Length: 165
Ligand SMILES: [Zn+2]
Image (cartoon, rainbow, N blue to C red; front, side, top):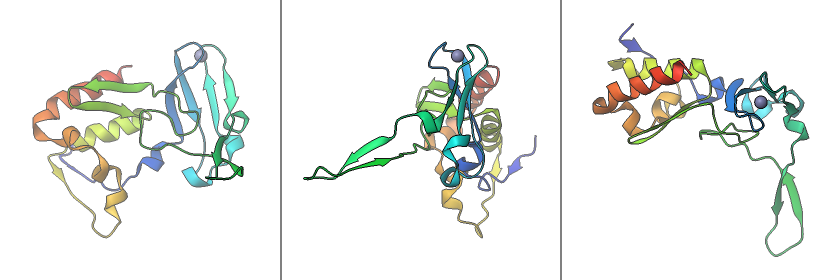
């Protein structure tokens, strides 16, 4: 494996097209699929499917969040997408790939994301592309415990276990 790895070239958005989740019906692995960039996604194209029990739901069919304006009766219907947590941004189902670690929770949207984390943590040299806005990148946003030298072996072992899930 290469020891030099550009961990700052990707954002979490790039892993949102296929998200593995726990099926709300049968608790097996289900998948949330969508296309395109998070904010531009068409609700009718965001879908939850489970090959174990046959569950098949579109995001467009799920209830919207209701916002009530303070001191009034005006309400708005809105969509709050939750990005960067151990649930998928749309259906808010628990991620399939997650594991409790001594210092925090290890989670990934899919196996490609897991692979990215592994390469990032494995890399002894992480170069930053300062020409891009690297603070938004995944590498810059990982929790400290995950990238700290003392946890490296433990975190890599955790990733390895999740890869076999
Ligand atoms: Zn199912």
